[in-house]
Image 1: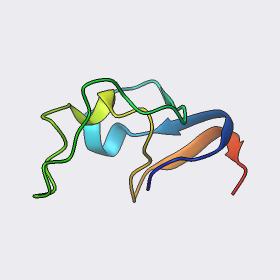
Image 2 (image 1 turned 60 degrees about the horizontal axis):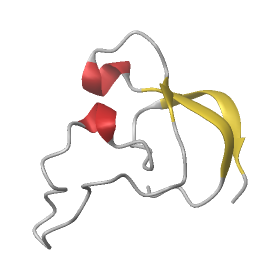
Image 3 (image 1 turned 45 degrees about the vertical axis):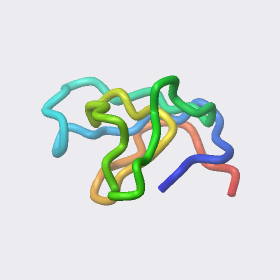
Length: 66
């Protein structure tokens, strides 16, 4: 999901990325991020997509205001 408001949000994406630390999320669009209409988001790695949260991940800190 695209994040439109959040406060101190950190998400555990280890199931997707293998990273051991939670990913800090923000609401600002990521530079270089674009969708070509085919569902491919500019070739960015999942760990670089800081303005989205993925199904199956866990919120570790913070909150979404929506």
